[in-house]
Image (tube, helix red, strand yellow):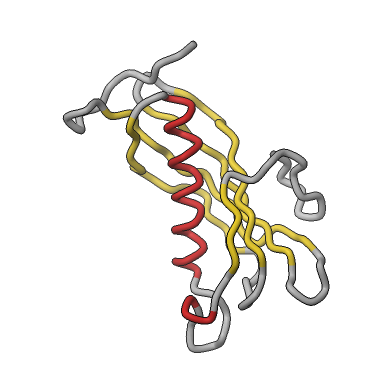
Length: 130
């Protein structure tokens, strides 16, 4: 995934959804928390795919909101495994929108989320590597 705000990644997004009116704040923009939750969902999918087990979010670092998301925007969330430790993974996550009327795409937020691998009892376990 590129950190360039002009070039949307060419790989498939982990999640793609439409921002709806119910997700707005009093200014009429989409809540940052809604965008954050979409990123957390996408990162959890990427981390679980990589670790081949249950995962949980344990931290978010370097979160930056670059531009607002509007009702009707199509939000695409891209993930890339950045670092892998013994029981955790850092996933770089970028969210892009395609504006409903202009069809322009650009990055609206990015961050690095840390996930921990869990066993069936919810205890930390080593990340399974191929």
